[in-house]
Amino acid sequence: MTAWADLERSEPEFTARVRALFDARRHKTMATLRRDGSPRISGIETRFRDGELWIGSMPGSLKGRDLKRDPRLALHVASEDPRDDAPADWAGDAKLAGLAVEAPSPPDAGPEGDSFRIDITEVVLTRVATQGDRLVIESWHPGRGLERRERA
Image (cartoon, rainbow, N blue to C red; front, side):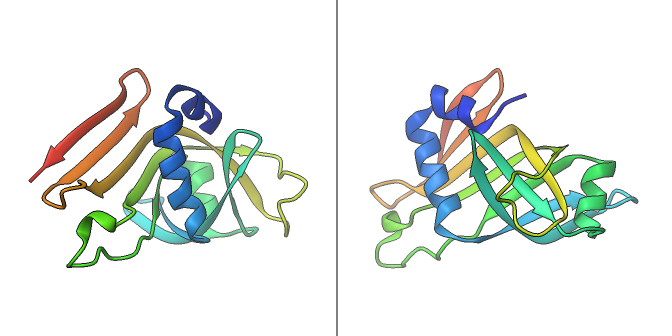
């Protein structure tokens, strides 16, 4: 299992930039798999607590049922559009993939429902290079660590 705290220890600068994007917006988009294997997109809120990334769902929600049946998920943080005249000022785009592990709700979780901590399998940060002429894609995977690619 890879917890958020594990990433913070191994890649503190990278995870700080990803976390800033996660913290900048309350609502994220989550992809789960329906019973027939087709994708489902849902709105979701996330919470960092005790070195773990948490999500919750209302009792009986379809996304909660999806995760109990197949724990694979992807999270995407909405971002502002880059300015045409200053693309390098764009904060970037953050995505995360992992497995939802059902766990008792933390005491401050709010209304009753299902709680899941995320076992992280991938984190991706996409941004525009300082020169504004290419994309920079940084990705982290267990066993491979942090990798960086650039695309013109």
